[in-house]
Every structure is written in C-alpha cells, then in structure tokens.
Image (cartoon, rainbow, N blue to C red; front, side):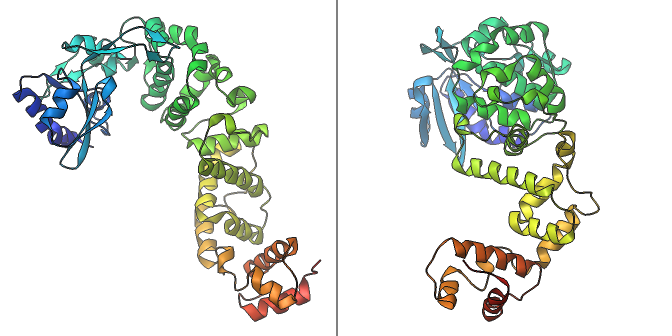
Length: 400
C-alpha cells in the first residue's frame, strides 16, 4: 500500500464524520507514512461503537466485535475499524480482564505499546501526537507509551514487538524501555508459542537483525521459549536477514535437534525445515559436477538456489559449502535446465512396471532399484526409456 491507500480509505472516515463521530488513521500505517516506508495495512480508530459502525456500512465483518473491531469492506478492500477503547487489569501478562469503549482519543492511544505506534492522523493528514511519537521516530528511538514496566507487565508480547521493531527499523531501544524488557523477560513464558513465532519470524528477517541478534542473547530471551531453550542459539552467528525456516534449519543442524513439536509449526513448515537440514548436510559432500547434478535433482532448483544464497551464513557458522567455482546460481540453473528428468515422476518406469518386468511382488527392493535408476539416468548411463532402463537394471542391479 502507498499513500493512495489512505485516499482509498478516506470515504470510511468521511461517512463516520458525517454522522457526528471522530475518526482517524492510527498505528503502524501512520508510523510508516511518516517514515516514507511501504504501508501494508490501514487501520482506523473511531469513537463510534461497534454497533454504530455496523449500522453505517453495508458490508461489515465482526472480526473482533467484543474487543471493538469491525472489518469494513469498502470497494473490495478490508479495513479494520476499531472503537476507542481502554482496558482493565491484565491477567497472565497477555490479556485484559475487560475491554471497554470510550469516546476520547487520548484514552485510546495511551494504552498502545510504543510512542511511534500511538500517533493518530486525521482525514487532512494532520497528526495528533499525544506522546511525542514523531519526535522518537525522528530520533530513531523505541520508547513505550508511559511506564515501560507497566506496558510489558500488561502484555509480554510487547517485549518481542519492541525487539522486532529494532530488527526491522534499526532504531535504538530507549534505556528505561530496555531495562524493563530485561526485568520482565521471564513473562514470555506466559505467551502462546504461536504469538511468539509470529514475532520471531519477522524479527529474524529484519534488515537490522545482525545488530539485534546479540541483544537477544544478552537479554537471555531464548531460555524462556520452547525448543530454543534446549539448543545453543547464542553460538549461532547471524549477519543477514533469514527466513525463519532457514534459521531453524541451520540452528537444528548445528545442534542436532529437530524436535520441532514445541513450536507448533505446520507440517508443511516442518517438512521445509527438514529438507533444508538434509540439503545442508548433502551440499557439503559435493566435489564434482556429477555430485552437483545429483544434488540439484534431489532437492530441486529452488532449494539449491536458496542454499547458495545462504553461503555467507553457512560459512559463518562453520558449515562447509563448495567453492563458488563449482556451486553458484548460474551452474545450478544450467544443470537444472539440462537434467534428463527433474523428478521421479518423470522416469519411464515405476514400481508397477518393475514388478511386471521381473515378476516379483512389491517390497523394499522397488525403492532401492528406482533410486539406482534415477542416478543412472541423471548421470546419463542410460536413456530415460522403459526398455532401455529394464535392460540396464538386468545388467547392473542385483535385486534382492
């Protein structure tokens, strides 16, 4: 989203204001607008209640109505419109016992996490900045709204959010805010692993992760997070942004620890990580073009290119990788384009054909033979033709 996204959302503010309500853009979109960064979501805050919001717009979705948030669908785009709200006492350092709606903007923004996220902007792009967030943006400082210990005691996720903003923006964490982070770090144990992983995914991929990563160690953050507390994260060197799957693959390879269940990752993400771990192991065994061909075939062009892009991080973590003379993007792409087959499905034989040709029942032998056939086809020892492959197997494979 660009500034034009504010223009696209203006009719929502206009309708609210035409009916006597206040309405403002708020949060990350305002922060990013001030910083001239890409804007991903435009959020709106208003003193209209959820019921009043729903009554003014034809297409709404009550995504979080009990907390004051209504999703307004306008010209095919979704906008979260949230009622000014305040919060009662928090429990378990993660959720308030009660959310109640208020009519005053100040009460709404004073409950937010950091000053840079507590700036409201009206329909004329005039900003309402009760906590000098714009000053902190200019000074590149991350500072909580009000007392830092109170903010983090309310919701421990704000600690991770602050560190994530540090990694994404490169800002300095203000001293009192940092001290409160250190003091409340153990409260991370109250958070769901899903919320933690959402923040870590963004943090590890932040443009300033190299300067943020050592701070995580100094705060002893890892000792309070499942899985990470069982591995030596501090021994890992991270000098460039990484996708979380690549990060976990390198970490698990170094620590020989792949018990990802505590992280509650999807099966697809676990498979991706495990594939990367296998690729990291295999890439170290490449010494010849034939071995490179087999690697590219086994893992596919996408994984091969990603491993190549991870070269600096792998080397920094004492993981050998073939010289760029052998292993580089150009050679990977060339080999992939010239492979006789690019997957087992491309083979001119399958298990059923092998059973028929050798008049044998199914069993582990099929997997072994197919693997040998794949290698032979890749190395061009045999053409990928059914009869040629059968004859090659008869002459070169001992079936047991």
